[in-house]
Image (cartoon, rainbow, N blue to C red; front, top):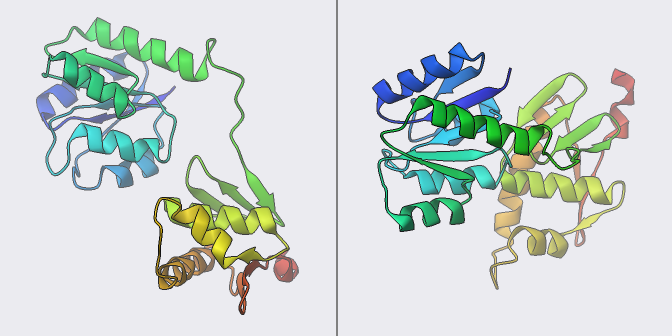
Length: 234
């Protein structure tokens, strides 16, 4: 059954929702680390997110924006705020629906079912997850996940953009200026050392998968992905 993640700092409400959803067969994850919601989200990979607005550290609008950088999963806000502007803000920040507290659990369930049908079920558009693969290495941009053979690691959005460029250009060179333009097109000037730092993190991710020397520096030009030299492991 579908996995649902609840982000609610009132544990009584969170547990109430959890009990009700489990009764209908849903798997439920309750977030408890409100300073690192995205860590829980990436680990859980839920099909739907129930999100409060008033939260410790950062509000629900902030976390919805972070989710939208990585996922298209439905987000339903549940909040005591009843103003029209709050509902407008919820939608503008990436939410799909809004439920006001106090709520009837049947209303919550109906909205969950509706969003799940729209995203994944009978009303969903024909949609296939994008995957970029070369020589046993696979990148899942919408999951921010990188796989090589039987190993898997989570990556950041910028790491994803770099690896995506390397895979799209493979076995050719991805130019430094092209990478800078793709990663930071909203900025007029970026210190190139920033790319070096992010490229070092990308190399570290490849090492986590057991791939050494996967990114070759082509001096004065850019970077090239090297995968085929690991064929002896097959």
